[in-house]
Length: 227
Image 1 (cartoon, helix red, strand yellow):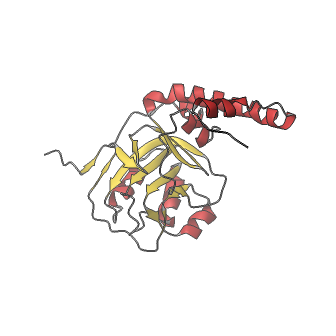
Image 2: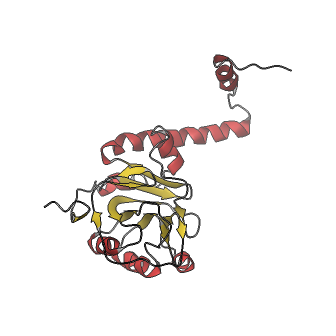
Image 3: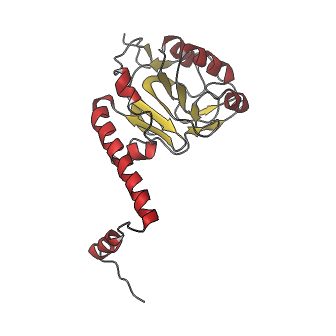
């Protein structure tokens, strides 16, 4: 029996720490732009605490029943420092998947944050402690602890596939997933784009930003311009 739907994989291969740290100063929009404007989670998955959060880490994945967090508790015990626990709770808003106590425990364990495709609770307590939590919203209704669920299998979170060891980058704009096999190319392209945008900002203020491309595109697409 394979126990599909109720199984735990305790270990997976993580990328080198210096590779993960390479994304620390890259905003999620720059990463998304060099990934075909895809791999961004649904816009409703946002930080539930103070602005200015930017986290990077290895995805530690959990699939759980929308009303249950038994497998999330087990994930907290298994996750390593720097991991980000990414939880597929099907986007259902009925029951909170975690709350303040679980954030305190994760903080002590060195877990870098939670990404939850569902709601959480204790929003003020989480905000006051400043632990990074991204979720679809909040509800006071608590979860059950019955299962089933899975740990460290490929999941869907915010309409994006996430596998154990993928890179998670999350900030005020939302959450981006970088498949682990693509991280080198994505990091290079995103850094180049960020540098290019710095130059564009400079050109805006010195009056040299080239805007001819706008009319060129409109003409190419057959747009009628008239007075």
